[in-house]
Amino acid sequence: MSSKRALAVAGILAGFLLLRCASAPPKLVLEKIDPQTVKAGGKELVEVKVLDPHHQVYRLVLHVLDYSGYDFPLNDSGAYGDRKAGDGIWTVLVPVPWNAPAQDYSVAIVAYDKHGREIFVKKKKQKQLLQIKEIISVE
Image (cartoon, rainbow, N blue to C red; front, top):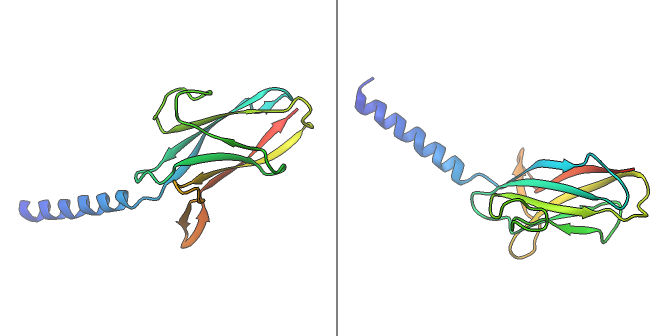
């Protein structure tokens, strides 16, 4: 293959990769839940890495699905348990009530846009809510 043709092919591949990265939807990756089992009256540290090349994610909220109204915003401000501002790792310290029954609690960490709307992404040709579902255990 001539060097001009090789350069053209390389340019096309680079353009394809650039377009693919530029159109990548936001993604949430669970980094940490600590401790694995929390005592009533304790705090649960939750960290989520946000991969969002187009800055669509404006807010993350941890919702305790078993109890309406138990919603905890995550932050990336370097405060309230977050280690470093702006590093893409969002954090929340979830206070567990001292009288919380010992059981597993289903939680969902949901992404919202700047207008307060839930963010949906295409996965396998279907729209799905951008979220992470997990279990927090209380002893």
